[in-house]
Length: 84
Image (cartoon, rainbow, N blue to C red; front, side, top):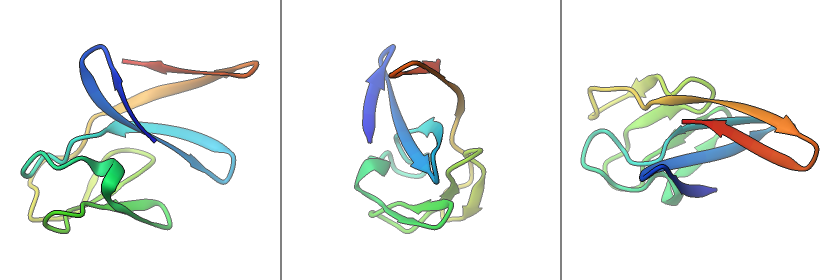
């Protein structure tokens, strides 16, 4: 799910019941990762194929050269809290 929090694009994902949040705009050319393809624990940007780890934001494969930001996620009741 693509979100904007505090003026920042964020990608929130649910992987097997655990939630993770990383930067939502590809560090290569700024394409929105919400439009990308999730393969296991990675997301591939739709524009140029850069691939990032969903749990950490780490860069797996370029052409991007920088990782995505990673944000802490906490579940309280039925709310998902993201620490930006």
